[in-house]
Length: 216
Image (cartoon, rainbow, N blue to C red; front, top):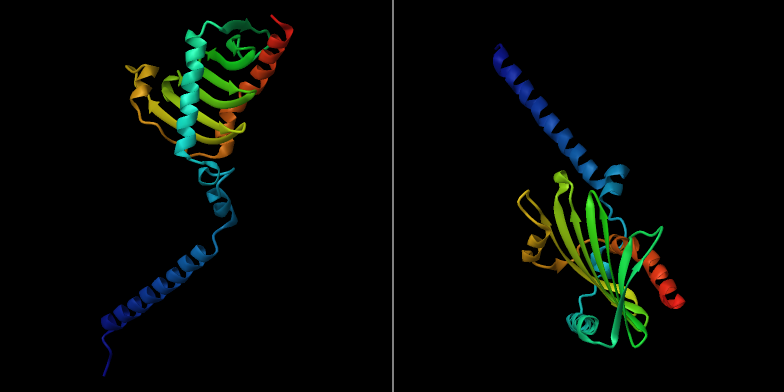
């Protein structure tokens, strides 16, 4: 008996469909097991992730916050503390407010301005070691109008913890609107955090210490 040519064609088509799905499944499984080297490199984290370096010790954070408060009290209210504004040539910033207490450097505050950005750094020092840094920045470019604030916490001169807040600003916003945002644990790499500190502070510290040593 002759086979219906329509049924035969349909059977052949189904066979090809099954074969195609089978080959596609093998190909997808192979890609999952052996990703392309370039893809693997792109997904690898760069630097030291926050899960490795971030040490959120609540007690240490509270003690540091208290010490920051004590330092501010000395800077603004203690008459024995001395604050001088130093001006610099060929420096990252034009000037810095430098506070000392009993001859010891306790606070350095400076601002950086350019048409695209403003940065405010407040450095807190005890017995020659930085223990806290407050970093604030305002990106003024219309296409990336935003504000950021980061608190850096140190133990023994080493960065151990940071928290931050960030806000995209609309045309009607001012940088102070950032203060309504919650502080969150810093989620990026140690190298990312360090880049905020390294931009100005190493050079500024050298210049400030030179000024203090000269007795100006």
